[in-house]
Length: 171
Ligand code: 5GP
Ligand code: MG
View 1 (cartoon, protein in one colour):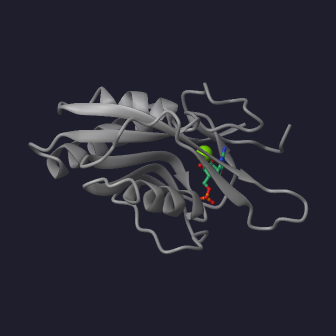
View 2: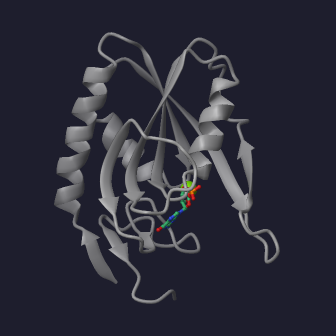
């Protein structure tokens, strides 16, 4: 395991992004929608730095990438979402890779009669994006490597690491 972004750097950056979000939503009630499961650590750290009236909701997105399905079909499970009509939404995910997950979710949330939808990601992979979506808030731009830790998993492991790391070779 190689450390890509150490714990203290993440902490400083999350503080900064929280400041940007607070300024963007000044005086406007906010609903944060976190994308399970990868968002959990980022979400928990971020919300404790936001001194704003806010609600939290969760959604799950999973892509089935079978041997024959290249792009993978995205399934959105939104049973956990409360009524979001008229709400200002900030969608939070761990990482923007091709951008397909975010794009799908933004479209889905817009379809629910929300007042506005903005997006925040902790990590964004350089040169990987396939669909047009520009996140409103970004923690770090990273090279095209498979990362784990701080919520991100490999086969559901490593989410609890306090730093972002690169696996030397998949276990
Ligand atoms: P996208 O739809 O943008 O291609 O992919 C986003 C999703 O792919 C993320 O929510 C995450 O679950 C997964 N993902 C993409 N790159 C990585 C990575 O480097 N590490 C981990 N753990 N997950 C990744
Ligand atoms: Mg994910």
